[in-house]
Each structure stands twice: as C-alpha cells, then as structure tokens.
Image 1 (tube, one colour):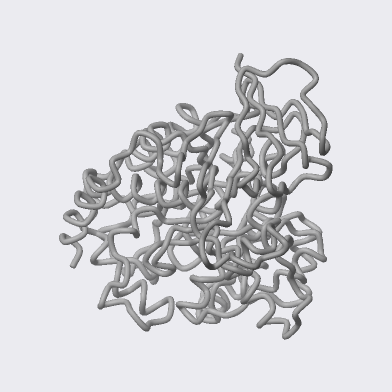
Image 2: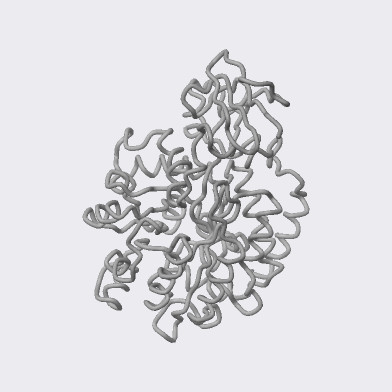
Length: 445
C-alpha cells in the first residue's frame, strides 16, 4: 500500500489541514496541522503549495446523452415542455455508438471540472439501446470515476396522455425486469463503492402510478435509492392537479416515495409547507441553477429546504439545457442565483456553495464516505491552481475559486489514484474524443 502525502497546500477545505493530507489504500489516514509531519514514513510526497484542495465534487443530476444536442436550433429559447417536445424525436435517434461517445465526453468534462462522483439519469431507451446503463458502467470504469447510475424510465407516452412519443418509452414489466438485472449486476452497497444503481422513473408526466409504486418497492427490497424530476415547472403542477387531483409532493407521498431514500431533481415550485414536509422526511433535492435559468423554470428554495432538514446537492443537469458538464461552474452559478433569488449578499457564501456540491450532494446520494476531507473517508480530491489572470489579487483562495470563476481543476484524485494531471484526464486522447463525438453529433442536427 502506497502512502502519499499531499504536502502543505495553498489552502484546503478541512479544519486543521494546513500541513496536508496523508492517503493510504484509497483513504484519508491523516490530516496534518501546519508544520506537522506524517506519523509514519510516506512513499511519495506531492508538493501542493500551488494548489487549493477541495473534496471531490459530487454531481447529483445529469443526462449524459444530451452532450450530443447542445445549443440545438430546435430547442433554443424554449421552456421545459416545448423544449422536451422538440427534442424527444431527435433523441429517439440514439444508438449505442453515439451514446457511448456522449457518456465518455460527459464523464471527461466532469472530471476536468473537479467532479469525482456523478449521478446520471438515463430514461431514454429507443430500439437497440437496451444496454445503455451497461455502457455507462463500462465508460465510468474506464475513466475511473465514481457513479450512481439511475435506471430511468418512461411508460406514459403521448397516446396515454403523457409527454414523450411512443418510440422512446417502454412497458413497466420490461423496465422493472431490467432494473432488477442492473441492481444484481452493478449495485455495490459497500463503503468506497465505485458503481451504485438507483431507480428513476422520469417524471409525473411521463410515467404511470404503477411504475412509481413498484419502483419504490423494488428500491426498498434491494436497498437502493430513488430519483425523479419534481417541482420543476408550474406546468408540472398543473399536470399533476389535472391528472392526479393533487400537487406533486402529495403525489410523491401517495406512491410511497416520501422518505430518505429519495432525492429529487430541481425542486423549484414547492410551497413553504411542502419544503417543511420534504425536510421532515429527509427527501433530498438536487439544485440545478444553470438549467433552471436557461429554461426559465424558476428559483429553487435552497435555504428553506436546508433549514427544514432536506439534504440539498448540486447538479449540472443535461447538456442540452445547461449546455455544459462543468460542476465547478455550477458552484458559482449556485452562489449568484441564490443571492439573486433572496436579494441578499449573505444568502449563500462561497463555502456554502461548495458545500452544496460536496457534502450536500453526497448526502443526496446516501454516501457518508465521500464529500468531505476527514480521516477514514475516501481519498477523492479536486486540486485547483490560482495561476490564471482571473485569480491575480485574490486574497481568500477558497472563496476565489467561486467568486473569480474557477472552471478547470489542475489535478483530480479518485480513491487515491490521480485521474486528471495538468488539467487533462489520464490516458484519454481528448482531440480524438472531440472529433469522434462531433461527428456523431451531426446525426442529431
């Protein structure tokens, strides 16, 4: 087992860690005060004096496949429902080869932004793409990133009164059988897990009540988590009231999802009472500030949810609504959007914004082994330098990452292994990936 000392960082998001961090067997074994030395000899020392060291960032909501349809002319300047209706027929062209490239590109972007763990919500299974989640697991293993892969689903199509076209939905029996298969093959419940599976019926307007309820029962049986879009738009509220005679949070309780196993994407249009209910039941919410802004969906009540006890994490959302897979960029968006929403410069601080993307996100995913720099936790780190012109004159290195707009990590470590060096993913030909992905995207023009 190699012992590595990240020595005397410029700054570190850990109390009493000015002397650095010692890593052994993929875990943090020592956090050193200024001037202190490791308690036992180390095999390697990395001089971190140019680096600001953060816990690896955790992305709790994404749609990897959407990297193929960024800034698409048919979807630009539309709100959620018309945006989806424009893109569903285009996404129906997904095939295994283009999907694999979309996943590889999204994971690479995330890693380069300092993200070490990502949850992807894949719910589109057109003909020939039955093994989409298997492809994601293979690609995550290849780049060395932790993932929670959600087996998304849609079984309520246009002919049934839902939003998606018939060509991209599956029947509930097929969805549930594949969910069990994926849990059996990939879901690792152990500490330090690299791959976990969650169940993720897409949204109230694209799945049946039966699928929601049976997914909840399956998740309970196999100790995995539940994820869905909820409270994203007023249109969704109107849909639930018309179809189910209740608001989305009431519907969530009706189908057995109101509990600590669940985390939700967006969570914008909740009342004060609904925030309190979600907090009492420890339902997590993934805040997606850039996507919410692009689609003009509204402001997530982050502070009300956190005050009520609901875990709140951060997500980039799909690259067709955010148009980027950069989680460090989302940290800055969370600060800016939060202050604008609450009309207060103290509504959210730089460190609180980072907390959303680290400990808050880890809590949404049910992980206690990542998201913080503490003894015994996994050695997942994002190391940033302040060498660019944008940081010159910055006096608080950690706040500077957020306020001055850091977007790219210099080094990234996952489970004690360097996965990004000098700003580039280890072992990946970025130029080739860009060419192949760009060529694949032409099919979706």
